[in-house]
Length: 307
Ligand code: CP
Ligand code: NVA
Image (cartoon, rainbow, N blue to C red; front, side, top):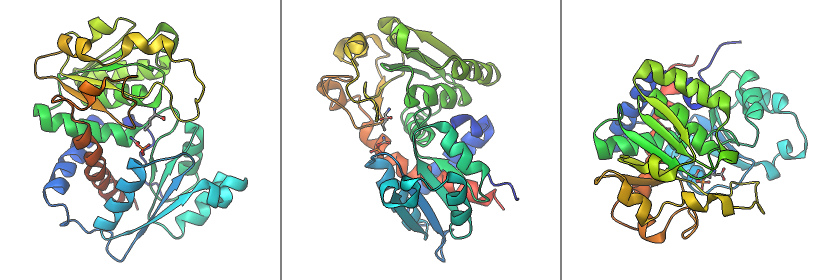
């Protein structure tokens, strides 16, 4: 079988490749309707096992703007939701679509899809990683700070979730200093921390995991957070996260020109204060828009490198 390029986790792109995708994302943003490599149209399957607003919209709009056709499908309306195997689904899809975008639960599910198909597979969020979101976040930081290498990004809250893991890998790849502030019981997967540390050693970045929110915020260029209750975790006790809320006090500890990111959906008064989310340092709406540009660039880049 021919070998396509996939984007299943942030470190599937080398530092140079990540920079190429981000450069292309900036070009695509400047000339939004000028790139139509999917004209024909070529189709892309966009599959959801979990809810979504931004990911669904940005892939559907982006694929259309590239001249292609997005086949957006919920698992509940497909046979995958009734127990058809991932391997059989992969074989059916590869004969009709040019790429597969999938939001699912376990990382092993998307890895199985990728192993079983001849077309690029893109992770649109798993329990472990949300790499498309972090590409958009990196684009947003580049726009605000003029570059990524050496920028300090501090993330607060659930250190064991997909966003924390993707900030670690994606930020380290970009040569950033990534700080994760989380309760001791909610730290990132040690294997991800080890991989991020290894990448950072090569890119000039660094990785810090701490339970001290104030120390993580000190002088940071970017403050980031995410919901304390990820999809599939309803009923979770969130009291232990309260010291990690991104509020005015925490923001006052950051650099004077710090920006604030949140992948959304946000819960004001929980992981982030309304005054911060809706305030002058917030870049969350640019961040949400950049999903469109970053993912268009990613798809173009992956398809150019896949047989
Ligand atoms: N940030 C993000 O992925 O949002 P959705 O869950 O709405 O797609
Ligand atoms: N950590 C969140 C991200 C939502 C975009 C979740 O998995 O629900």
